[in-house]
Image (cartoon, rainbow, N blue to C red):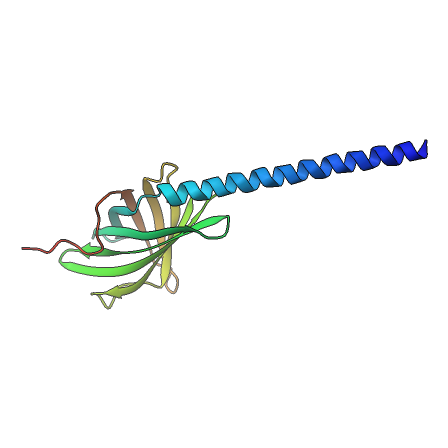
Amino acid sequence: MRGLDIANFHRLFSRVGLAIAGACLLFASVVHAAENNLVRNMPRGYLGEFRWDGDSTIQNVVITLDSVRPLNGRAAEAFGCGYYEAGRQVTKIKVRMLVRLSDLQVEIFELAPEGNSAFETGGSHRGKLSKDLQQIDAQWVTTDSGQKGRLHLRAASSLTCAPAAST
């Protein structure tokens, strides 16, 4: 009788182990599919507006993504460039964006500004990429001062990292 109980116990744990292994493989393939879907389908360009809280000046923004790659099974990382245009002042930037796959939360870092020595890069935009990957809504928070602003972008094609030359 005792030998029969041990055999049943062993079979039960073998089945549980197989079920857990199968679930892990299924989860890994779902994560990999989501990662590939984002990398393949994410638009390579966004345009829109940025405005500091309490300021009426609207800055036109263009971001072009040169590369999008899987990062660690939980996120994707994109690199590119872009510019801000406020009146006649243009600031070119480099961009790094992280996208969390589980909920499409984004964090956008702006680096190496050219054209405006007062351009703020000490912070990041944090927000959400829409499920269809066509819109980004985010809030900028400056690390040192806590100053905030809102960024609203929509997908667009045929964008470049520099504004059209004015005539």
